[in-house]
Length: 73
Length: 402
Image 1 (cartoon, rainbow over the protein chains, first blue to last red):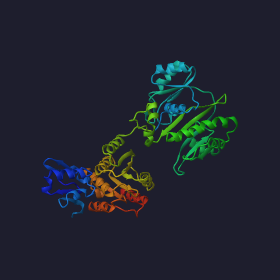
Image 2 (tube, rainbow over the protein chains, first blue to last red):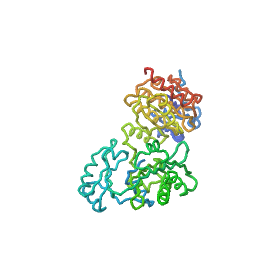
Image 3 (cartoon, chains in turn blue, green):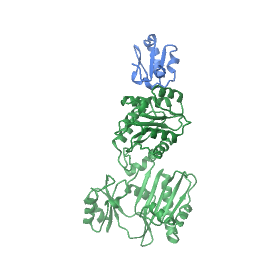
Image 4 (cartoon, rainbow over the protein chains, first blue to last red):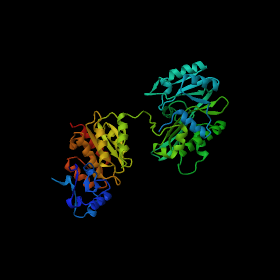
């Protein structure tokens, strides 16, 4: 379920990759990603805290999408 | 944070100011013992953080030990501006021939400490300043340059005090100035300083306020005085609303969104930034608005923190709308605060476009913030609209139905 303002979409391939999951969890300053042995989980309660730093986009280029819901019509 | 009289006097005693013999007691039996130990007529004073003790009946005089015990019993139930005494100070009664006033506080306009002295002490200094201005001197001094007793001497002399009185008062007032600076006080007051029949002076009552932000610097002093870390020491106990505000602020380390002070108006305020809170609060009142609260936000609070603060304010009985206003911000993100207050409105069951009278936070990430506000139909403005004007718009909207 998305936040009120922000949604984050993770490519299923990356979502199941423990190494990528660990990187995403490490770089996100507001703990939107939680890493586990089976991959990455998006913590829905933290989505609206996203500070749009794009660090997740840098560690998983093309595999993570940040959606600004307030820009959608 | 305010000190009780006995704590203020303990601080003064540390620095050698002349004090009458006294004891703090917490029972009638202890009051009796204190009277006997002091040996003679005593004054008993309830220890509360607000003024007006004498008028309320929390100051009494005893000529015998039995009277001292009876005075204790009479003082403890008395409420002084809603507060009961924590304990009673039993102090030797002095034979006073004249009373003086001395206080050091901050002059916000001059941006310097100011020493206020009067040779008409014991009564309201504002009243003296109005009716006998020649008996009140105000002397500013530097908080950076070395202090000189000359400053105190000139301030005292300006009220007509001379001779041995001037010479004896000068070191007392000079020490008060040094105490004010050394302990980061916002007020160091002696009222009255009594002149005894033998020509000596004694501190009869003292008021000390410590800057709350300086608590950490003076932990040793507070420990010595027995002031607990959880004691807020405001002039009145915090309300449930204020306690809840402190809780919102404490939950998350990111930024500040709390420090609320409750008022009885209908316009909730989410305000802050570099003195912006005080400016905006005053501006709302200047426009005829009735603030429901004062608060401080800044330092880039998280979305959840801004949200919880908004929910708290909107939940206050009588509050239908809020104004979200700050000075120009560089270390707080406009979009983050916008998200927080809008989410707070929605979770409170209110339409943000109606609940938020005005959103005036210019600064970092404002373009992103304005997109969010537009999406939810919230009226906003940038730095081309002054804080004063924004406050006026908020107050004007309060006249319209929510």
